Structures are given as structure tokens and as C-alpha cells.
Image (cartoon, rainbow, N blue to C red; front, top):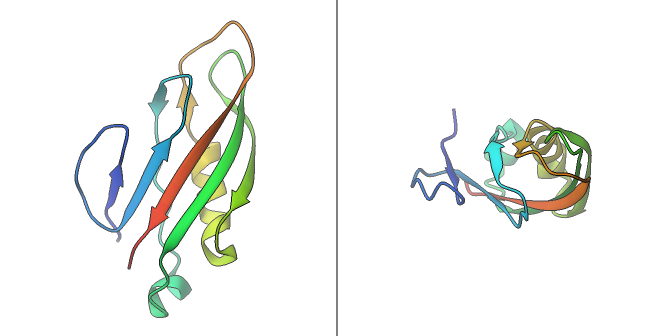
Length: 101
């Protein structure tokens, strides 16, 4: 199982990182699992995911802005599970995941 570093929490761990260019505070952050195929070829990289966040803080949609296709699917799945603080209106946030073997 891979360990991760969540940049916003600034808690050092090792295999992956997630950071948010958020205007709203992320209350729940989910780190993606490192795909077995990516591990086997020692693939590293960064995936940026744009998320639309409802006023209640739930992610309504997530879209890859860039990153390797082997890493993108798990990054989107993780980003969809993020929860943000409530806001009077819908916002768009960017979450960045960095994968390291």
C-alpha cells in the first residue's frame, strides 16, 4: 500500500502527494491508490484535476487538466471524494496529485 503526503496538511509521508489550489478549505481529502501497472514501470508524475464544488461542499464533477493517463483515473476518483467547507455559491477548485514510485 502506498503512503501519501497531503500538502495542505503538511504531513510528511512518502509515495504520493495531493495539494489543492483551493479557495475553499478541503475538509476531507482522499489520496489515490497508486495503480499496480504504474508501480511496475516505476511511473511518476503529476495529475491536476479541476473539481466543481457545490455550495454544501460536495464535489459535483471532476475533470483531468493534465497528467499521465495511467494516473489520471485514480486521481479523478480520489478528487471526487474530497469534501470542502460550505460556501454561498458553487466554486471550481484545482487539486494536484503527485505520484512517486
